[in-house]
Image 1 (cartoon, one colour):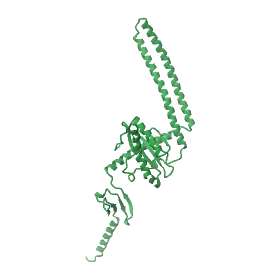
Image 2 (cartoon, helix red, strand yellow):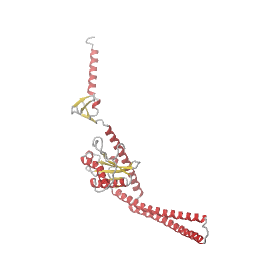
Image 3 (tube, rainbow, N blue to C red):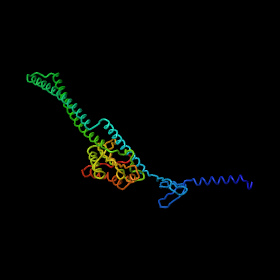
Image 4 (cartoon, helix red, strand yellow):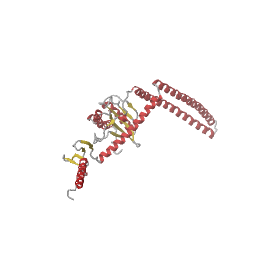
Length: 344
């Protein structure tokens, strides 16, 4: 029926609904490889690789959608995530050891008394082993004289006496080894307590600082995605030991004049005191094979200024120079290390 008010109302409602849908439709802006800017509510598949912006109805930027990553970029991201997870595991273990150290002792004097007690126990064990060895040596000397007397008299040395001398010699050798073991244990104990005391002193005098897990980490997809990862693989043994010494030298020359932490697996500069400083960590990650991986990473204060610092040319230069510094040092000494392989 012409002029039916119900039909007019239905058409008006449909038009309004279509208008609402049009307003609510997402609009994107991106620039293609030729530098042409596009606006559309749909991104063609061949343009999905481009970084794009989601726009409001007033053409304001609502969100940034990163460009699709290449296979190489995804592989690098996986490798970096794995190295960081392994590094964080080492750091978490160290934090647990630090906590146990602080809970175990109330002062350095208490640590020294504990060390003296353990050394005294080992000295007692050494004296007992040495006394037993002297007795066995005296018994062996008597047995050997008895065997010599028999031989001079033209009599055969019995198999029982020969077996007894062999058993006594084994006992003397075992007691020799026991004394050496206790002496080596004393040396290792002194070295361990020296490290623990130095760490206890550092922890006791340290100021409160952000937990490493709360600090922003560099090298995300937005900053430095195309840069090589600061990691180098080295053969376990003298080569990797020298590479580890070179890693320490690199930190002291290029990151900080002193280290806040130095263990067999972790080298770390002091935590940042402000937004213009970062913490540098190198970890020696065991691969479970015949090589280790030395991995350097940075942490900054969780603030806009700290984020800018971790994305700065200064930070990129520090990360980028690590591998070359170690390779040059190994080459100068006549040693070499294979490059860190991808996909770890």
